[in-house]
Image (cartoon, rainbow, N blue to C red):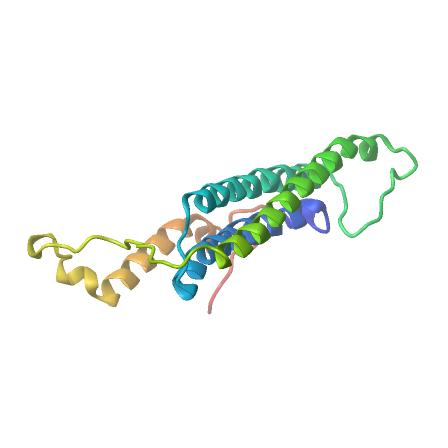
Length: 188
């Protein structure tokens, strides 16, 4: 896979998908929760609605931008280059619609950032009050978690078993001679 996507826009799209989507959305959610809690302000229904709109704008913008980066990267478009058609090469000309889609996604993302800044300022200027954020309802005695599920050892063992299951085929390929003229890996 590395030979196909190395130094292409696929790498940039992957980075944007993993960091700029999941991490940024997590920070947005924490901000919408943290500002009212720290400042003692009320999260008004209008700000809640604008927060949902901002989150959806971010997701749609990232879908356009990151999705286009992934696709055009698989088609061979390099990263870290200035605009060029490489002498009107047919492959490079085919990349242009994806670059336009990336630009559209970037514009949508910029609108999402502006809306986020507006929401932060509006949250800081919201009326004082208390907003309840129920984390979870109190559990009754008969609904308690079984004691064995509260132990780290159980969860570490489950994780190890799942990892071994997930990597069985790659490990078997590394240990045995699966390829013509390729000796298997020997530990001793």
